[in-house]
Amino acid sequence: MSLKIFFTCFIILFCMVALFLGFKSKKKWYVAFTAIVCFGAFISGILKFTSLYYGQDSFCIATSGEDDCDVFSLNIDCRKLSYEHKYGKFATKLSLDEIKKEIEKEYGDKVVLSGDDNEIMITMNNNVVTVKLEETKKHGIYRYIYYVRAEVIGVEKTEDEYVDIPFPKEYLNVTGAYEKEMSIKCSYEELADFYKYFTNVTFENEEIAIHQKNPVHIKINEDKVFFEFD
Image (tube, rainbow, N blue to C red; front, side, top):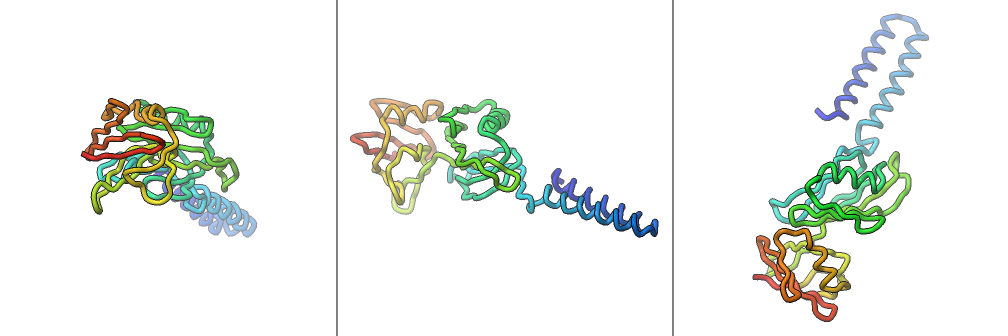
């Protein structure tokens, strides 16, 4: 039983016992006072420990579209605003520095990088997840709104066969579906830096090779990125 359910049941039980004792005493003022206090406690409990208060114990996304992929999980008090398997949005009371500390606590053996003042990048098991502070405003009891996404794209290898590739989406200059050849807004060095903590990536002759279940080779030439499959 989760802590929220336990406290909600405790509050309900407390209210029932208090009301029972109030009615048993046969004192109208005591019954009225007890009823008001219990009603307030019950409403407070409902708001604080159930979905009416927007609370969840964690926020999770998949790191890729593979069936056996890892899951990135933030075990914090938050409100889920949106979720689409590999990305989502949530609100919380925690600042970006506090979020980073929670990530380091949970993933102590992983690589956590501060991309800039509004973003954290986490490299875990040859995948990258970005946690970005989108805005600071009141959202119920929560103040900070974050967008979380797995830095992965799906490229068509053959007809109706797609391969998930860890890749920094912000560097792509494309609308619509990802393709084997796309415009890109970074240099080879910048792209290679994205993979520097991967254990399944090699660099040779300005080519990046990702040795995953479906191996892929990545090249950049004249503001274009090219994906080739084995």
